[in-house]
Image 1: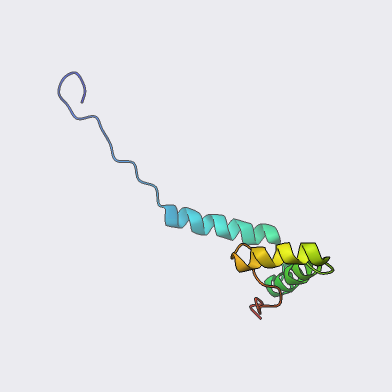
Image 2: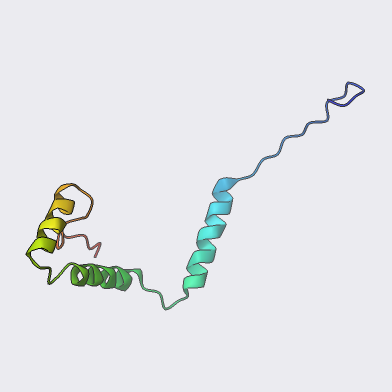
Length: 82
């Protein structure tokens, strides 16, 4: 309130849903028309397989412990969307 008793507050609203839609559209636009999400997913899965391939016995045991604890997903567990 102001010194003379009048209410000087105002309501401020912001539509987060509309802003999120705008942000997502800008991300897709920035990725460009060449971006293929299915190919990207396959490449990420191939990189993941390569990262955890060729482990020695100690590394494999540590990896298995992390998988069993739910920290890492099991390799080749069918995580591909397509």
